[in-house]
Length: 259
Image 1: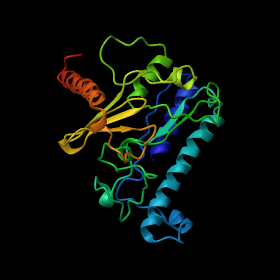
Image 2: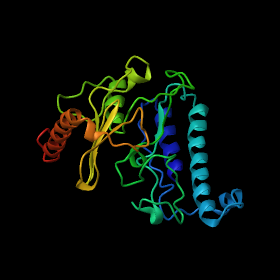
Image 3: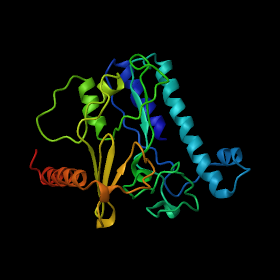
Image 4: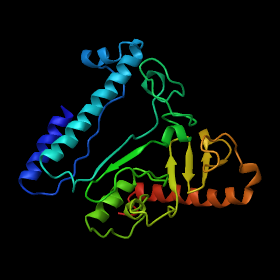
């Protein structure tokens, strides 16, 4: 149903030669994680929970293929930017923020610490895929740190809009995509009611559940196994100051101070 509406929208825009933006939120694989009979049959060698989980993801893959095939059929695929990513790491048992898999929630983090609801890498580091045949060479891979807040600034930059002067969490990713920018300026900030963190090109400062600050060198320790905060006091204090300033800036924006 979701992709039916997307394809109808794109067809109308293409017919009228109108630029378009479609933001597609798939429910898969959120709870209750129910796959249809066709997809369960594909994974009958697994237990019931995995059949449903794998089946749902396969059904979503098919819908993404429908989108790409439709763009090709309309002959607008070369000039259409398509991106895909998740909004967080895999959910835990029951579909929420439990830090263990189980039942229908069979997602894995690939060794990263934490899951959905955690600001450790397993909760926030997800793959991102970009396809834009007429502008981006296929088969490239990058470890450049990016965040979904970058969508806003990147898309508006592609369209040639000049952003008003105010704080932005995102940056224009096109220089990084084109290989002209090797390091991210500034940092990526995250916060929940009980956790805050910041990620730079090398380091991550995190306060899990309002406890002590922890520092990790993500280039050397991407699974966050060795807290180096005790031996990097000056760096912790510098990053802490920047992070708390960002938190206050977010509060100001949330209260309408930047708009």
